Image 1 (cartoon, rainbow, N blue to C red):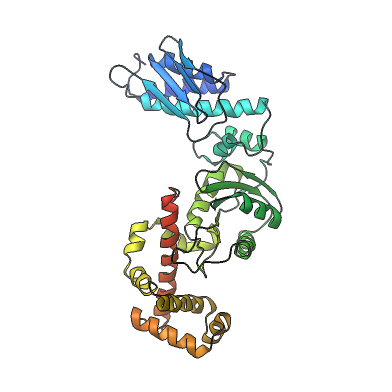
Image 2 (image 1 turned 135 degrees about the vertical axis):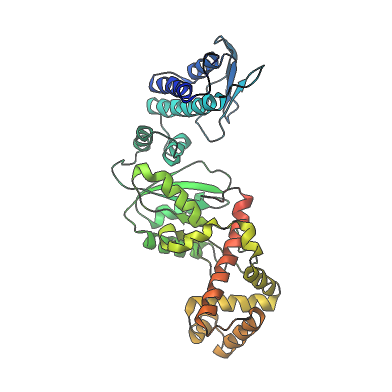
Length: 373
């Protein structure tokens, strides 16, 4: 590194250095030792299992114990310089982490591969991996690289029952990643169309996990469904699935499984930060109205009316007289300054209710640090 500057040519030399390591039969120890020799100082790595591999500037082992486990996003790598940092240290660390991940992928092909190995899933879903690495990971997982796949994002305290539900209700093969918090990624190769898949999953989840009338709207399970894409576009489907997840809700009239392709222009709302949703005047007023028991009943009735479209259909679904529905809607109109007979106000009411559901769900997703695209 002492012979390298901060120019693009020096950066490419580092990238090529690690590319050659990745294409060789080098193991994790060799990769870390080579990184230390290149950096001319101590370099280390730590896996979630607790395994640490460290080498000094001359390639001498400083601390290395036990066989390391499968890769996860929690792999740590670091440089221990006694003096000033080198301008290209971040590039070295990035390529070291990438190469160690590839070492694990390659090693998996020579060992007993466990279906759903987190290293395989990470490679397929990451947009930073090479094309050939993604194809190889797909093949190692037993998927067909020539067939389209889609990615699902499942939010649940326990994803196991949801995975079983998927396997019962949909044909195809599923590979589940190791859960990160309450989020689980599922790769799916099956002929289901997005709308049909969403409808089937929504109905199945509602049947096993009835909707909640609590203000929080419950804690899932929710499913975001990405579009069916080529293997190389799997990262895009994963982003779509997480964006769709923001629209899922466990409220009485919320949607448990949301297909990204069905959102259309509504997807633009996924870019609205949680703070903006909560600050919206309409959302704040509807939340204030729903704070009391009577107000919550009025809001539920409004949601039912926006779903079913008529007083009599809404009354039938709520098992009340249509005059009761009319009375509740009149109260909402007075509180919100709406005229539900007007198309613009009716659209506004529907939008406000959607934003309210998104704010409830987004608050929970944000607490789990999984909001984003």
